[in-house]
Amino acid sequence: MMKKNLQKNRPRRCVRQVVATALILLLALFLIPLLLFGTAGLERGGSEAPSAGGLPLDRTVVTPQPSADSQVSVRVALADGSVLTLGLDQYLWRVVAAEMPASFEPEALKAQATAARTYTLSKLGRTSDRHPDADVCTDITCCQAYLDPAQAAANWGDAAETYTAKIAAAVADTDGLAILYDGQPIQAVFFSSAAGRTVDAVEVWGNAVPYLTGVDSPEGEEVPNYHSTVSFSPEELKAVLLAQYPEADLSGDPAGWFQAVTPNSAGGVDTVEVGGVTVSGGALRTLLGLRSTSFTVEATAQAVTFSVTGYGHGVGMSQYGANALAKEGKRYDEILTWYYTGVEVAPYAPPA
Image 1 (cartoon, one colour):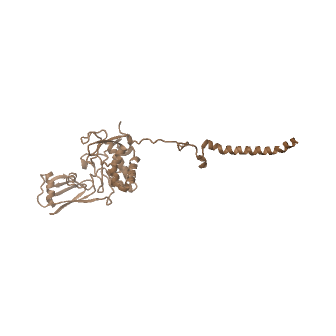
Image 2: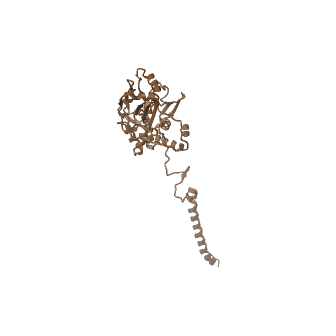
Image 3: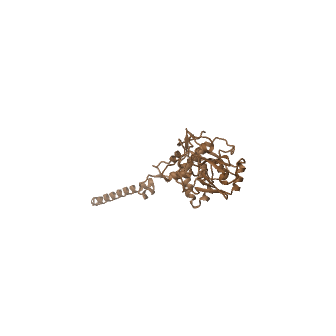
């Protein structure tokens, strides 16, 4: 009797064993991923590899290398007499912010950053009586303009964040690049705007420089104050001129004071006779506060008026010309090789 009961119960035990085994297998399949990976992988469908510190293990972590500019130190003589040491990248941001409108095209800003870097590199290691304890200063009559970031932000107002990033990008995108002639940084001088053409360095400073020769420049009426005038009464102008040129004969009608104008290569004034004394256009520009040497003179008994086009000494890169070229689709290196003759734009590291 008992044997029969055992035989009857055997199928039931087999069924229970099968069910139990199936349950164990299901639990194992569910629990093993939880034990190995936690719940995060399941919540994302299990498609990502396990992570450490939030970063997938199958992704390589790359530590950014320091920029070439940040490895170069520049000693800057500030207006208050103190000397501030900055990385070249930090200094260039301040120069570009001061020297070129941040609203300009990105390629123009890159050209400006590269020109400013090159100019700075050419100054390193050279001693100047104007700033013996520094590489450069913030006096534009000696070195380059300079604008503190806080002041720049105040000037830019609501556009501060955009312009700050825009200039930082211009510096970063040209990191370590300089304008070279025979492998060395050039004197990368620049100015605001030309009257159709730049001029040779020899016409302004008396020294011929192979990469500073006159070229066409495309800016024009879009330039603020592209045309300007400066007027003097005859008595006022006579006093200013005779203080500088006492041998000049400024008697008679003011219309006869200026004679024999010799044009420079850009169509401006190379020299002019002032009361019989030959004066350079550059000297007259400085003495009278004219914006450039591209000027004409109109004199009457009531006033002597100078009509001026453009702004700056006219040598090297025109900033508004660079912006015009950028709008035409030129890259920053093309802009630089346009304005500086026979150069290349390439990486350069100053001697240690």
